[in-house]
Amino acid sequence: MGTTERSLFLGAATLLVCHAAPALAATAPGRRLFPVLDRILSSSAVALTFDDGPGAPTEAFVRLLEQSGAIATFFLVGERVERAPSLALEIVRCGHEVGVHGYRHRNHLRLLPWQIVDDLRRARAVIEDVTGQPTRFFRPPYGVFTLTTWWEARRQGWRPVLWNRWGRDWEPHATPASIAQRIGEPEAGDILLLHDSDAYSAPGSWRKTLAALPLILEQLEAKQLTARSLSELLLDPGFRGRECVASPHAGQRRSLPAVPEAGRQPASTRQREVDSCACW
Ligand SMILES: [Zn+2]
Image (cartoon, rainbow, N blue to C red; front, side, top):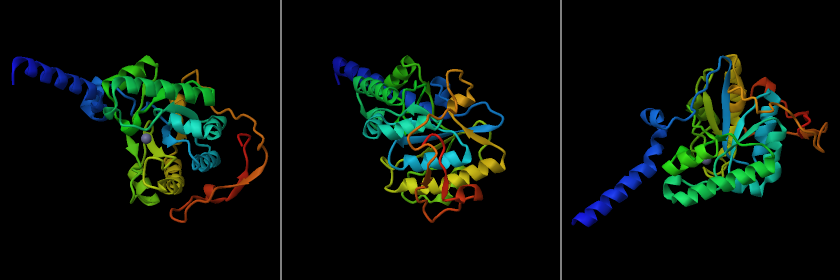
């Protein structure tokens, strides 16, 4: 290899390493270099987060959270918000928070820098336009950061967020019990990752997550913990908190979407029909 070729090779290798270096944020040493939020200081709550929505199942998740008084942060995919704007709106109407999970659900290691920038800016525009809420948090698809992802997220003023407990609910062989078991026994300040859509995971996986959610909430209750949004836990004064907006469905009674047979439900969520909150 000549000097020119070697220089080109080394240059390309350096660029590649720089491009992919923030992917190390998923590891403990990498987090020191590229800090991400994976736990929060709290004495009484965990941050409950859902990725990959909105989709048809999202409504069932919001209804279930409504019954338990839990509040979550939903990391939305821009193109899915465009397809189901009413579902994205219902999330915030019921007091939940929305974060950015990209416009398309692509691994950023496979995108060029300008494609990443375009993706994130499009995601912000559509999510904020539809929900009317500012976006403060960002979680990249698959939890993978590149240098461009990292820089652009900071430029947008977003706090990069990963998690410290997950249900691995996207896996084809996951069950409600395995999801709850993977989440384990959360402690105050933990950030839990679940998915309210099967758009990028095993078909029908959301049903198992939905069935696991009461088990997880029951576990939190047993430990006297509540599920809150990231902003609530960070005491962000800009977050409006739980504030329902009246909708045409307010005051009506609605049947809950069917929950799969598998998975036990606590008494508090066994009721199949409830009074609708003002959000619906
Ligand atoms: Zn995702």
